[in-house]
Length: 288
Image 1 (cartoon, rainbow, N blue to C red):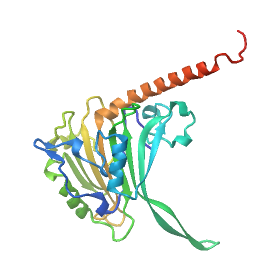
Image 2 (image 1 turned 45 degrees about the vertical axis):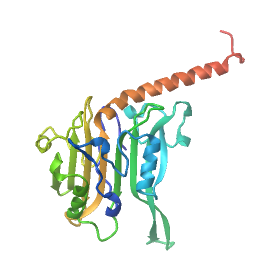
Image 3 (image 1 turned 135 degrees about the vertical axis):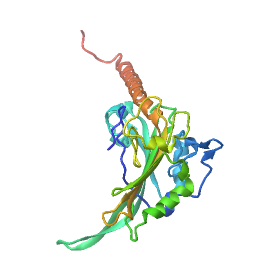
Image 4 (image 1 turned 90 degrees about the vertical axis):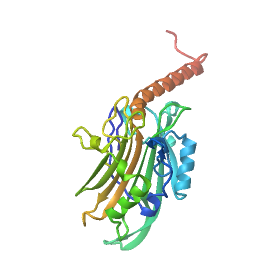
């Protein structure tokens, strides 16, 4: 679970079949270099509307099952940022659109080793995508997207092969941060608020905090953008990938979403309370 305040708990996890992870190279660069608004994760780009994001997800992977999620409190500040299904919202009067959850399932065979013996199949998520939006009703735009999936089928992909694929889409020579250790391999492209790519020297500073495939650990006013990739190693061998996580985010938009969520909740709550008072007028009430 990720908690939004002025901080975001970035998580590095997940993976998926390589053939689905990286689409053929696209024009993500401008004359001045990479443009964060032309980058994508699972086809989703920053600034997209909910309908645009849904269409992009369906085009990227037709097998995705996509659901809308809602908030019932200013949850970018206090709760689970992925939201709930509308049917699970206690007070639907104050519910507002929060995110999209896309999932691709496969049937997994499970066999019991204890009586009663037998085998059965059940849906098993092999890939998930979460898309977050600015919490302003009627003005929702993509501010972050994260794709996660495990690599479960043998033979597991080699990290070196995955690196080759990611650099076929995004130029390695413009990467801000790159690291490989026992936990896996991570690479990031970081931009300032003017969409200028930050140099590799910035990624080597002690103050640089890598996202490792997730959302940033902390966001501040005026932050820039980021594309972060993580291929997690397995316990079997450092050279094999056990999962992947890829994220794209607008740091300043994430920062502003905190105040936006609070304002949206207060506005919806005030409207709901006013409507409740209006409905009660003329009805039997005690004398005060």
